[in-house]
Amino acid sequence: MSHTLGIRQAQKQKTRQALLDAALTLLEEQSLSSLGLREVTRAVGVAPTAFYRHFRSTADLGVALVEEALGSLHPMIRTTVSTAGDSGERIARAIELIARHVDAYPAHVRFIARERHGGVQPVREAIQAQLARFAEEVKTELAKDPESVGWNDDDLLMLAHLYVDQMLITASLFLEALEAPQEQRERVTQVAARQLRLISVGRRHWLD
Image (cartoon, rainbow, N blue to C red):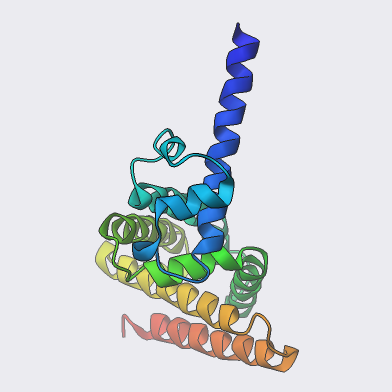
């Protein structure tokens, strides 16, 4: 009996993942607000009623995609602002990690970039909640840095949001350069490094 339940659970999880994958593919060409559940189920080859065994609505599916796209990034975000190494090493490490993530998961990055300000409120809120969590985690890492001595929590959180926003901007730039010549990708790296250095310089003089 337990073996049968295990098989059913595995099949249910497989179908759920297939619906997420199909939706992500369809969202390469449209926004979530225009996506119909019948499109998704047709792409997977299941009946429309099967959709509701996994998601309450396309908005609910979108929230699950946000979790899939951003939920696993928390360790990476913490690594990008780790106090290990000097400022230049940290910046290089952050840009390399972002570039590699965009190369590996372009559809997820494109989905977040589009839906962050899209028309589906639960998805916008899910993205904002994840970004707020990133900022809190970055703030915690920044507080460990000797350069943060004398900073209050509000200013550290403001700085953390600057870093998170800059990471999103850098990811978008790498996404645009995904199929571009290597020289364009190198320009993205150079621009991102200069922008992060500017934040770092401002940080060092904030208490002045």
